[in-house]
Image 1 (cartoon, rainbow, N blue to C red):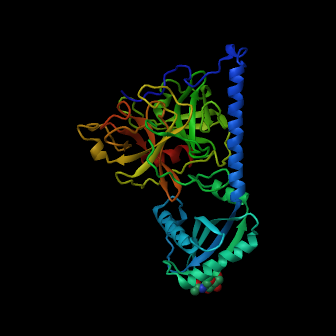
Image 2 (cartoon, protein in one colour):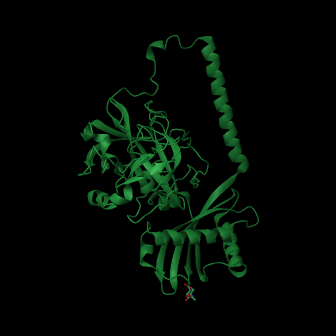
Image 3 (cartoon, rainbow, N blue to C red):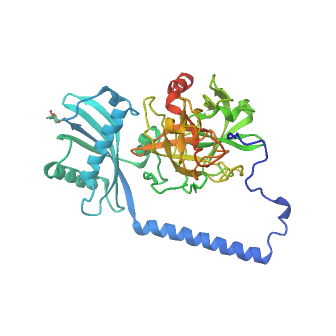
Length: 438
Ligand SMILES: *[C@@H]1O[C@H](CO)[C@@H](O)[C@H](O)[C@H]1NC(C)=O
């Protein structure tokens, strides 16, 4: 059995029962209601107190400096290139070494390289630096502290790169500027207070997955819904107007006016809702073999990026993930074979499986073609399932998330030796560019 887009049944999430409203307020219900409200208020006070007691504030800076022992490579100009990614990671590690465990109340959170540009003496690095400091702090005085720590490190620490001290400049930027800097970049997850959301390291398992609790954890995840029939498929935001999904999601209905798209971690109370203006299926989608199971949907009006709605990065066509790379799949799909759609977004960590293994006689026996990617576990247990179709399989590289797969098919869900099969996005990078210009 292949994953079908959900059948045209009524949505399975809880429905409000209007006819019972009149007798709703009996004394016991009222007491329970009061208790629940009291508990919610209690928790809210707890959370507020926590933050007030912590009383730290975020301070953001834009740092620019020359590094004289790196030669410029033209691929540094492309943010998704391997060269830019590796260099940035090295620079970010060096920043951590410089600022971590500095004494006093200044806490280094992270750095994020924005740009590497050519320079007569090597390269110039532009990076965001994020710190926490007691809210009594003053951005200019903290700036002096940061500079002192850096200059001290240049003298005392063995650093892999030579920073030209006299080229170093530091500018304090506010929340909004920092948001804008990162908002026009893909694949970044932020909390509402503009702090980076850490990658989750625990083993979480959509079948045996865990519910996403934080809004903004997977800000590119969308729900594709058919009017009158509810959630059908997942999709991923790749620009202000374009979504990437699976072609098989539109097998029964290709009329854009019948579809809507929502964002947010629940289906019943979405943060943003949009109608669809255009659907583009891959010209060579083959329903019998699931080949080229990729499609694009364009929104009629653009969405604005925020910490809860954000686009995911498209990988370079050259990206190669070795087997057993950790990747995440997210969706509103069922958590048991043939079960109902979930109202809350779920996530699962799975691992890539090589095409050779996946094509073995006892696995998928040659059904995996060059445009497909297997991920899951050979022992089963953790997998995507019905209703997750079209949704993202993402890969984290220095806290930037790339969509490497689109949930496509699988034999049943989470069976041993039957891992999930995904459309390999890197294989279709050219096709996506040709249709969207992205
Ligand atoms: C260091 O930076 C300063 C200011 O940008 C520049 O004038 C100087 O030539 C640089 N020195 C080296 C060794 O690159």
